[in-house]
Length: 531
Image (cartoon, rainbow, N blue to C red; front, side, top):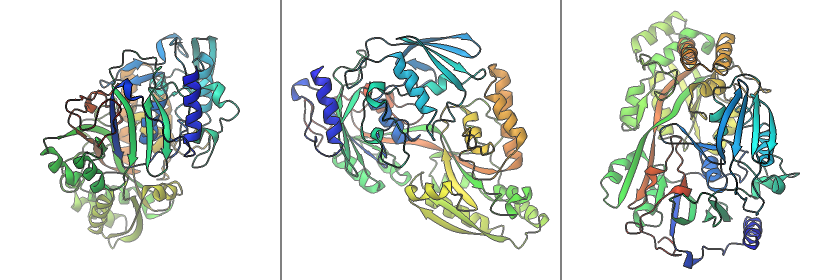
């Protein structure tokens, strides 16, 4: 118990810069790892933001009830098993012998407390809106009740990163982009404990010596995550051995990385869809389906992938990835400049018009160059697009304000299911339910909403697939968005780092299970610091 209390106290102080000298016990052995990432974690609150960096952190310091395997199945974590009692009640059996970093035992009331908190989170509440109640049956059993049959409930449980009720209770306010107790304090059950955080420089994690998963093959004792926004600087750090892992890899560097014997490139198909949202509320011209279709036909997705992404993507003619139910094999990108011009003429805009286009310049692979290419393509149908690109921190504040007529955005389905995209990007905006939260196109189709709600309740897999396909066909017909491509997952690691074995389909590795071969690893072993 003394060790738990000491670590908890150090976490509290280190976040203020006081407890920065904690290092793993050299006698404990194990590997040290440094990872360079393009973004810094905004908050220590696992329920504040739904982002890759936040999920990566959550899997290190906390544990979900279940998590994704690489084949798309579910792996029990804090939940050991589950069974449907009826169409709207799932009984979940919880793991015994688990402790939070404070030393508090993990119990069912912690899970109930966590789910109720998630239902209050701006970013997560839409995922949890179907849960009507959570009943604690005994200290290691909960019943999750839903408003209606919920085919994706297990998918949602991958986001239940359980927090320590006794540590957070009364101080559990969620403050997005602001300071709260949870944003600067942490107590989870995860494989790592945060011991140092220097904003803009690094976050340091050490392995939890009392972690419950004794079967984990992971052998990394200390991890340092360093935010490095420059692609060139990240790669240079990897090549010199200053870091062992980096992500993302810039497309211009891929060929070079592939030729380096001491570096391994990990390239996997991704499900993040990059798209343009056409705001019908801001521009009368965009309310005309012929104009929206003309824009879609004028954009050459295959050329963007070939020339700008250097083949590191898959051209998209729909929102649903091939891995998802609802994907339509025959719905492919269409590029027809002549037809696009004819549609502009029919709509009365043969001479074109001017509009604004906004995109991030450091969020997606080659995002600024893609936006520039779109400007050139739209010019061919006499649409003059005034382009403004911004760093992602500033961009997404303006994105929420719908500050341009066309906005670029990417979406990774939170549930590895097409309906998640439709719920957030296609459904009519509804502040109460969270549906349509990121629909900045102004699109609102009551029939699409009915089908989206039906897909959220249909338990029969074949029937549900047909519903999802009908939604995709509506989106293709109405053109509220222009799909561009699915972005590939790219990491680069030094020899001996077996990252591909723990990298999940949502592009974050389970670092607790990471194995590093000491013979091939550039860093020292047994308490040394990675050179």
